[in-house]
Image (cartoon, rainbow, N blue to C red; front, side, top):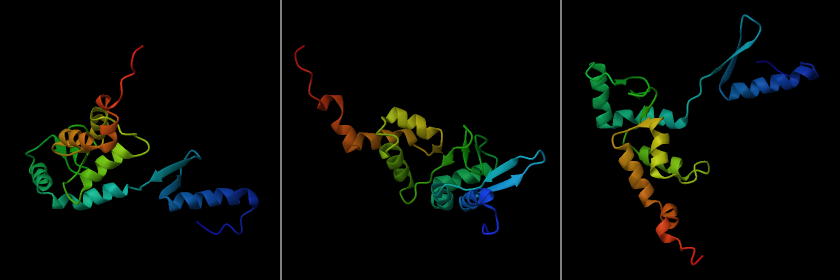
Amino acid sequence: MGSVSHDDEATKDLAKEIHWLSRLGVRLEGSPNGGAIVHHNSESSLVVEVKSKQHLDQPTMELKESVLGKLNESFSLGRWCVKVPRRLCIPDADGLRDRILEESHGSRYSIHPDSKKMCHDLREIYWWEGLKRDIAEFVAKCPNCLQVKVEHQKSGGLL
């Protein structure tokens, strides 16, 4: 990356975009056929936090020991894969599980899904003991979801 002050006008925009990509953690590399290979090594701050707090959760550490001792073949180290590859094992530390549930249920993009949909979505990414139970309890306590249940709505009246 160099200065864009010595470039002509046609390449200044391209250079600015390359600088912008580098600030995002994207690295471009030339390929032998004249194209470009894009490398992106960024990681979610939540994933970094989960990995840093896995040692605080005793069941997670016991699971790690069983994996290292080859006693448990359905798990593997790294991102803590569980039966379905690439599921992150969430420790019960510092409210990480609650934060994940709040974000997946109350974000603008999800619009309060029911427990079945939420369980389907979260099981693709995360794993923890009692995930389905925790989701059902969380959705059952959601004040917005309690207000829009069918039993709280007025009937349409006579037709």
